[in-house]
Every structure is written in C-alpha cells, then in structure tokens.
Length: 251
Image: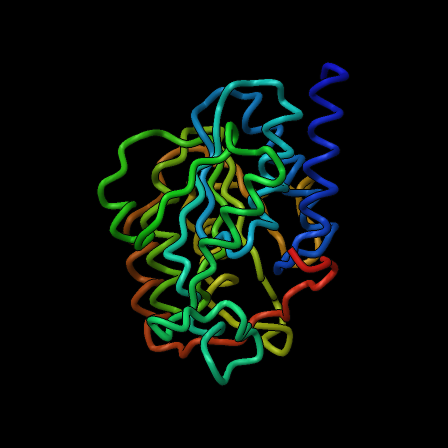
C-alpha cells in the first residue's frame, strides 16, 4: 500500500467512524479489510445493499482506497428506510422525514456525506429496489454486503438475488448475524446458515466482528437449499435490529 493510499484510507475510515449508522467500529474495520482484499483481488466491483447515511459506504470506500485499485462500490438503497426505521419503531429518525411526501428520505444526507468526504470517485449510488436491480444486474462482483431491511421477505430476496452475482473467491458479508434469538432477528442468521449449507460458500473468519460475518464464494450455491430455506423463513415477521451508532456530530 502506498503512503497516499494509506492516508486516504485512514481519512475515510475516520470519517466513517464519525458518521451515524448501524455498524460498530470493529465491524467497520473488518468491513474495510474485507473490501481492501476484494478490491485487490480484481474480481469485479463491490456492492452494498443498505447505505442509510453512509457509515458502511465510507468503511467500504476506505477499503477500496487502501487497495490502490480503480474499482468502485455500488451502493444500493431506495433511501425510504426499511421497516424498522419507520415511525413507531426504535430506529426511526424523524429529521429524515420529507415534509412534502411524509416519507423518510435519507438520500440527501447520504449524498452530502459522500461528497463531503471526497469519495465520489469510489462510490456510485444506485437508487431503487434491491430485488429489481438484482434481476437486471449482470456484472460479476468481488464483494456483496447485505445490510438492508431485515424482515424475512426482504433479507431473503437480497441474499437470493445478489449472492449468485459473486465471482468465485468473492466475499459475501452479512450484518446482524445473531446465533441467539434474544440478540436480534433471525433472517440474517438464517441466510448465513443457508449460504454455508449450500456448498457455495465457506467461512472467512478473519473478517468476523461482532454481528458481521463474511463468507468466501467457492462456486455455485445449491438452488434447492436456497429455495427450501426461503420458504421456511417466509412467515418470519420483521425483527428489530440494533440501535444506530450515534458517534457522529451533526452532519
């Protein structure tokens, strides 16, 4: 890593740590390391599902900067908030509600944060439904980070839609993976278990931190395993995730 790459990566990491979001600092550092490895492998661009205000986006961008490569991160979010961010839920942030529409809209804050951190050349925002974008996506990816809505239907759609897009050797990162139901919702954990059971992934333990788990794609996952587990989990109601990290000053 060149001194300039290291300087920029550290600056983006520091900015990420000061941005409101749902990753712990340890998870962010692990994600940065995974992104650096993935970018350096030159298997394709990186992609995240769920960007909120840019905390995870900037940790991933820091990893790309560390690699010194010219690849990019595609950051997918409809920016209207997942179910656990709506009014009446613990993670709701009233300041993000658009007065004209009455809907949450985190896009302006996300865009401001990316631009303020000079990460425009590393990050491409993609606005819309993750499932619809996945169904029209053909580019092989080096890393997929799943951290969108954690209700069963949404989580499984993200996992089933994006995990097959990974190149062999690419990394699948899933946030809010809790083995104990008392600690958090089941869909991320069930998707993680299904990936392992599919035969298409193995654990990348070096990048595990708190509730972040990272797997390496070894080949095509077994469609039957994905379908069977998806049907089994479809009736699971949305679950509350961890509260947002609020280490940031006002953006």
